[in-house]
Length: 452
Image 1 (cartoon, rainbow, N blue to C red):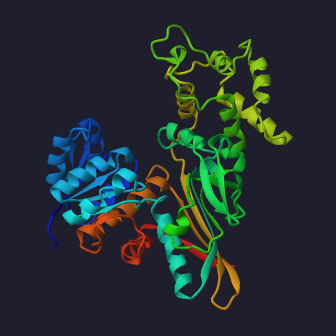
Image 2: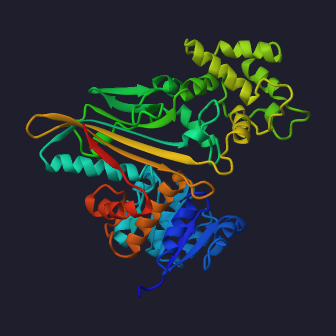
Image 3: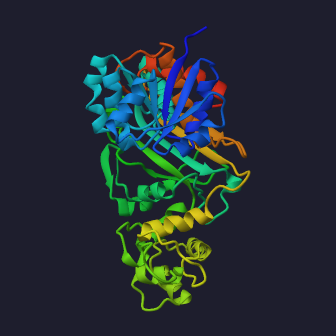
């Protein structure tokens, strides 16, 4: 019988529960869920026997250090900007840390101190990043071992509603706050394409979307996700003339999203007229009139003004966008806008009213790696790796499972002494990623590989 281990789980968001459920299966883990407000932690803790709830403010260094020191390992599922605070407390207490986030510069700076303390700070072990690394490196290392080389690498991942639940003009639904999804539309993209470094400014990101073929049943498009240019070095594929990691959406999303961008809805500047303290009603037609600087708040006139912001010249696509604008109700005098302070946040509130998952609706995650390979004998082929998973109606969402479960697996492997590399690390070497991959299929997470 293994000794009991005490785990501190910071955060109670929707990815926390699949992680918690996985770790409770061993019977030897005692878990404390901690949030700044104990009431939030208690909601999750009450679902499982023997799970405790606590209040921990990570901005309070003394309280954080005390909580971390009382446990064997801490899982940080809070905003990535706070992970370095958790790691500093863990280094001081010589306790391991697991996060699902990208390694930020502030986290990377703690690598030497973590190694000196003899602790593991495991990161990038969710879906994207996480599962994407595992299956990409598997094939990359297989090709290298066979004497071949990767000449092109494309990786696209999306968390989407299942086809039957994609029943709105954007073909998208939110599991949590819409703000992060919309803010991502402002990100620049940088990647290698045919030997040239491509840089796309945020306002032009939606224009770069292109069809991504995975299965004939899916009408998917993809666009670059931040800076993926350094993955040639990170994945050790120096011969890859194309190296891009991107985001998947359903067909039609980019054109509609670009229209919202062109209208100015990604502006998060606080506005007095949109603040919670503003007096009077705030009908949507007046919000849109102010945003566009239009002379009238007449819905038909506003729609004509919006038509001028639609860039696609495809007549059917334009009709669909106008239909979507009407569906959103953002030119209606009868629908009240939520006073959230900025155009971005007012729109987010409206999207969350209309585009959250309903009872019994499923989400879906789809991840495709595509490799162009030059083999040792000079021949060429294409290899693909596809992970497709659906959520359970009224159960765990696929996104929650594919982020939370790999995190739980990595945590258990660290506690069991099967992952031992110290420092601020990610699953980039076989001794780290292989034990995790070995356990994923039993959780319904796998990749289907094909050589073309």
